[in-house]
Amino acid sequence: MVLMALSAPLLAPYNPIQISLADRLAPPTAAHWFGTDEIGRDILTRVMYGARISLWIGIVVVTIAGGLGAIIGAVAATWAGAWTTPSCGLWT
Image (cartoon, helix red, strand yellow):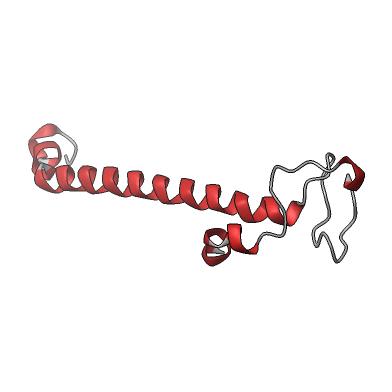
């Protein structure tokens, strides 16, 4: 999936935003393996280019979540005794 997304400009048979009203809602054929949408854009090409955006969003979200998780984990490990001591009433 990553290789397909990265090489979309080389592998995609059509322009992802090119409109072809003559080919609208075409079923899958040898020319359009996934068919076309309501304004004639090739669906396979749009899937390839859409994978690039989806993978980029996934990488950004995982990076942010991992960074925040590491910070919260470090704070929790450093100050664990401050909130879990028996004197605060949680362990009585």
